[in-house]
Length: 193
Image (cartoon, rainbow, N blue to C red; front, top):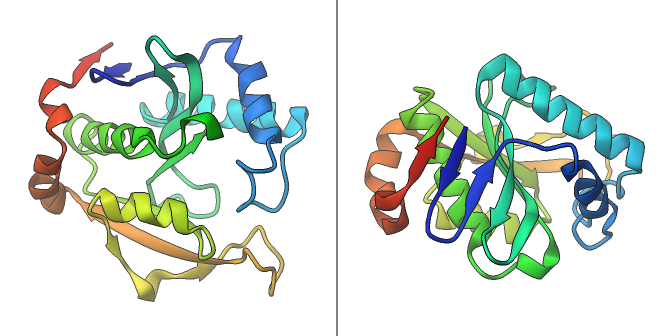
């Protein structure tokens, strides 16, 4: 499955993406709201889990291309978290060269549209460490609703860890029908299989 707007493309993984993904996950700035940068082995394992998720659910974490700029700008998509298979999250991780240009918001909006329109999801969430203000701002730009009652301590982190406390935002299919009007690029979204 491929999704394209005038500026971005979300596409399936290729073997050569693994090296770019390792570079992304080894960047201390990119990984500053995670416990630590990933080793090459950890990065490959994560990429493998994304691809298995795609086989299992039909949707997953896609590679973000910026035509004319980068064949691998990061990863964006829909994921079922390992610690709670009742959730579907929209998530993103971009090379820092592409921060601040609206690419994360645009690609996440494409992922939301795909989740609601093609996979008939009713609710999609997004969560991050409470300290991760840049990602929270993307959630807000998407029109997602903060759910303070759903904040949680991430089970993969020790109690009291500075990144343990996570905020959670939600978007419902019904709410998305109104909010997607804020993203005119979705009128020209092209999806191919």
